[in-house]
Length: 513
Image 1 (cartoon, rainbow, N blue to C red):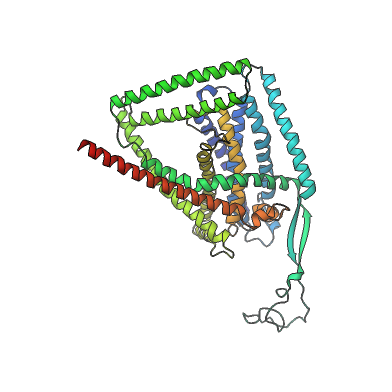
Image 2: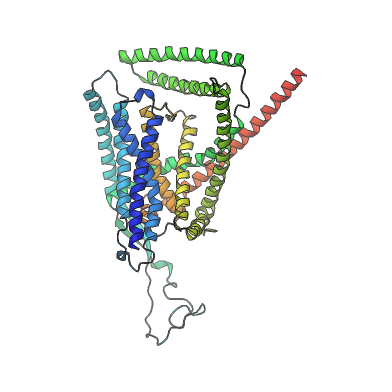
C-alpha cells in the first residue's frame, strides 16, 4: 500500500512538470511576433494560470486515486504518504481566485498601458486599478462572510429502545433489526425529528464557494452552448470546406479586394493611434477600436481561407493534401465529440435531473474500466472533465463573437497577443472551478468519499443563500436548455445551408443548360 501511495506522489510531480512544459510550448507557439523577447511578466502569468487550470482539472482524478490508495485500510491513518487533498484543493482555488481577480487584471492593465509612458508609471497605473479592485472585493467578501457565511445541514435525530444482548444473531430480509419489529427504530423516526444544524464555514471555503457561483453562471451559459457547438462546429467546418482549388484569376480578384480592405483598416488604425497620442480616448474611441479589431479578425480569416483555396509555392499539392486531411480529421473528431456530448447530456438528465436517478450511467462505466485496469477509469474520468472545459471555451468563442457586451480575444497560432492570452486564461481559470464542482456532482457515485466531495458536495450545497441554486438544479437545467437550443440552431442552419445549396445548383444548371 505504501508503494502505491509513493507512486501516486511521484506521478503527481511528473504530471505537474509535464503540464508546465506543455504550457510553455503553447505560449511560444501561440504568441504574436510583436511579443517576442518582451512582456515576460504577462508570459509568466499565462504559463502559471494555464498550469493551475490544468492541474485543478487533474486533481479530481488524483483525488479519486488517492482515495483508492486507502480503500483496504481500516482507518485513514493507516495510509502513509497519501496526498493532503483538502489542503491542496483550498490552496489551488485560493491561487485561482487571486490570479483571476488580481494578478491577471494587473498584467492586462500593465500590458495595455501607454507604451510611451515609463515602466514605473505603467506599474503605478496598473496598481491603482488592482488595489481599488482588491479593496472592493475584500469589503464585499468580508461583509458577506460575516452576515451569511454559514452552512445549514439538515440532520435527523435518531433514537431507539434498548434490548438485551442476544446469544446469537439472526438477521434476514424479513428480520433486519434486533427485536421482533419488521422496521428498525431509526428508520421509523417521524418528520418532526429533522433539525437544522448550523455552523460557520472557513473563509477559504467561502471564497471558493463564491468564485464557484460566478464561474457556474458562465459555465451554464458557455458550457451549455459549447457542449453542442464544439463537435457540431467541427462537423460543419468539414461541410463548408473548400471543395476544390480556385483558378488564378479568381485568386487575383479576391486578393485585390482583401488588399483594399487592409489599406482601409490601416488608415483607420493610424487615425485611432493619432487620437490616442492626443489624449482623446473617450467612449467613441474605444468603440471604434473594437470595430477595427473585429474587422481585422474577419480580414485574417478571409486571408487564411483564400490561402487554403489557392495554395502556392513548390509544395502546393502537398499543402492542399494536408488541408484535405485536416478537414477529414475535423470530421472524425467532430463525430467522436458528438458521441461524448450526447453521453454528457444523457448522464446529466439520467443521473442529476431525475430524482431518484434512473442509473449511475457513466459512474458505472468508470468503475468497470477501473476493474479492467487500475487507472483506466480514472483516465476516462479525467477525459470527460477536460472535454467539459473545452466545451466551455468553445461556447465562449461562439457567443463572444456574436454578443455586443463582451469582448473575446481569439487564440491564433503564432498571432496571439498577450492581452488575448491573459483574457482567455482568466476565463479558463474562472470556469475550471465550476467544471470541477459540476464533475464532482455529476460523478458523485464514482468520486465519493473524496476531499472534493467534502468541499463541493457538502459545504457548497449547504451554504446559506446559495444552496437553493443547487437544490433545484438551476445550473444543470440552464445547461441542458442552452445545449438543446444550440442543437436546434445548428439543425436549422444545416437545413438552410442545404436548401440554398440546392437552389444555387439548380439555378446554375438552368443558366448553363
